[in-house]
Picture 1 (cartoon, rainbow, N blue to C red):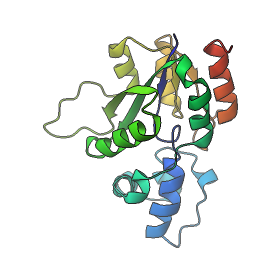
Picture 2: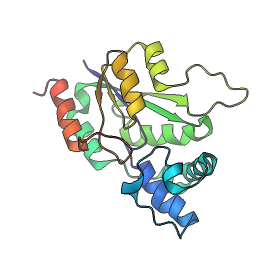
Picture 3: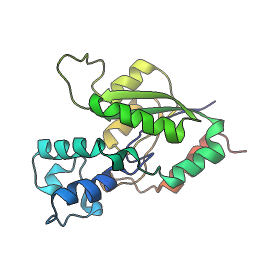
Length: 195
């Protein structure tokens, strides 16, 4: 049975879009940057701010009620209902550890019928916290499991491919992929041996 490793933010949900519209633009009403213009991730240079300013804003948003109650990506959720039983699933996110409990709760609330493992690579080192892996690639090498990574970050895709995993990258403004989420899910169904 195929094991699929799913990125959480901007794959299972639309965190960056939600943050831009309900976090950043609420804090910076004069900003005219659109979601399509976020050609970098992190997008601090596009926004013309320091990386730390972006990270602080994103961290604040991740702790909000709106973030905790994001609607799952409807295409992905529909795929899980129709095809999810045909694969095993792991969620793998990179985010600050202090924001991880809410993300784990969100994943298990919406995808827990299929995703049985929730894993995190801290996105920033924290004093007093062991640093086992610095990247998703390092984590995947340690895990030694998984057949397919679905992720929006080109760096994660490259690392997984170098380990021999198949990769699927839905298009986002910050990557060069041209695949729609619909196309990614159709390919995943084929990989799982569509009946």
